[in-house]
Length: 169
Image (cartoon, rainbow, N blue to C red; front, side):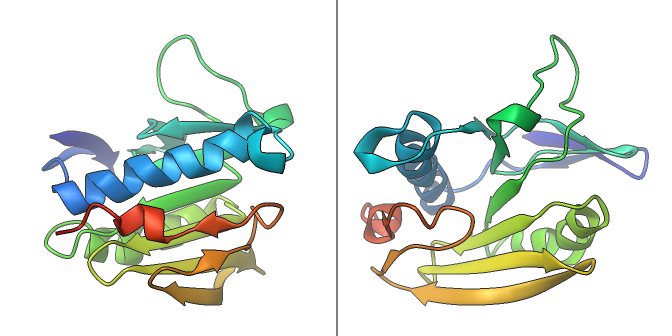
């Protein structure tokens, strides 16, 4: 189970199914190489966490992947991370998390000034890329299938989306 604090209540959600877990794991590897470590011609300069506990006011949420520009990141010794990420990716699970990710988390993230949000759907093989503009989410692009993408905030290196769904059966 994944536990989050929502409006003062502990809310438990089941662990994701394998298509979700595979896309989450694969994407974290794809962005960390060039954007954390500077490999494959990437610029480095980012810190990533998989399923971090992040405080958004009184709520503690657990996004699938979060990234901070290194100069903004401060890791606590205990408790949730207090610094709003620069980028979050939520991997949608049609049977459990998609409605919560879109209906609850997107407005919460916007209200706390998250700059970039990706929604990955491993069932539909889509990536939706959002930028916060004047407190509202602007859908920049939707990529489908096995596209190689250069998109915000990681446009410096192409990301091959086929790697996200390559383990699908």
